[in-house]
Image 1 (cartoon, rainbow over the protein chains, first blue to last red):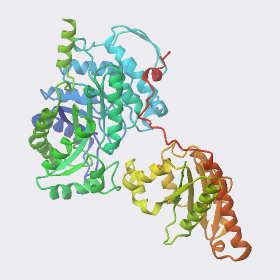
Image 2 (cartoon, one colour):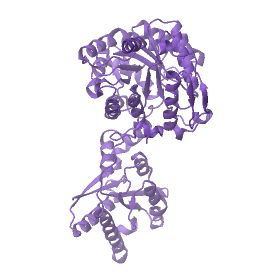
Image 3 (cartoon, rainbow over the protein chains, first blue to last red):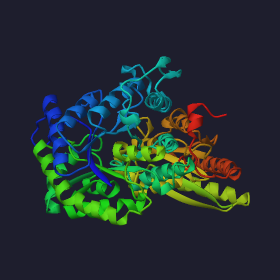
Image 4 (tube, chains in turn blue, yellow):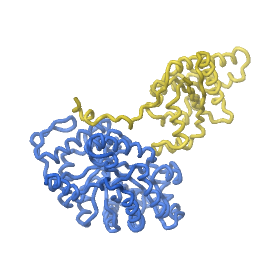
Length: 361
Length: 205
């Protein structure tokens, strides 16, 4: 099982000091956080993609390539890549390039983006969100799997004999996850292609996450990619830890109370009960996250949100030390002991290359 | 089959005349159903109890606990009686907030009785210019008669008091007729039966 972190890339004022980082500081902090994630033994670093303030990650492959040059082992990914407003041709080119530069140490997660005003900035309409995701991804797959593509659709200009370069590394396109919070169509899309499905459940109760994952697993089996429990599932998570759980609650509460999205709403206690947010000791985090598979089955990737709501860089790096040092080794051990033999690990470039050689041989 | 009548009351007082009007309408509808040979039961959703959860739901996007349960009860009701006090010339904010977080399809085709309370009968058109369009938007089937009870109606002797009683009887009977002719099969589960991808791609034959 893979463990990692994902960042939204928000520039948020620290509510305890009233200070917000500059964009420059936030971008550099993102790199420091990714490097720390590798240093403490995590498997994945993923960045969001946003095109409006207060977010900085508008150019994910630039950032990921820069991080790749400074790391050796961690898988670089996205959370998410906007399959609606980006031209699928440019996604094909950018991420194939990243794949070559990283020697396959990358994958990506497709998402629609839920900020209405962003769509028209890129000549699109949010009401076409699902049709855009469906058509653009179908084209992206063809650009990666067929050397010469002639294509016509509704949402971009036609292509006549077009070759997307560079071609995917070793002829194997990057592995794709599809992220969706509540659209059954996206779970269906992931299942149809046999791709991964990521439910970012950080703001949602498990009852909902379970429905989405079950739908994806059932349809994955329906389309003949394997049994339902062999489908490739990822979940989000959110934690804040101190050796003494009261200290964790005391320190995190002002960040929670003022956080973007859920701040000024439910209490930290209510939100912790209803969502995967866990604020407490490392042992409490281990118990909570080891139990996730009771609801969704054995899954392949767990990503934690660690660096939002104005938490200072120093605190985030400390949190990563605890996560990588105390929590993830134990979660890894528990997951490995529980994983049925026929359930696969998350695909990597190496495992998919080996698989394709086996298929040819 | 036993019909489930769900009363949604946005009254805040204890006791509340809004709740009282809801109860009287539920009794009238239950009696009228019985005359058609149909058993019924009444459940009451007091929005006051869910006020904090409603504010949280606006911010988080999901309902939990008692509010989730109330929304599920509403979506499976055979008939709904919606009663609000009039605040600043319209339904109360609490009333609207509840219907703002109702699932989009939850009330489609559901018979609904509209009712409101206020200090003066001059507010009675709230039923027609505020409440009826809201339930039309939700695709519900509001009964033709909607009931407004002003302060003066509650204590009125003679014709005025009988007027409220008569309106309650008429509205209850109309709701019972609508409820008798319909069985709520419950909302469609969007996760049970997804649209196949080939249909989304437009390549299905």
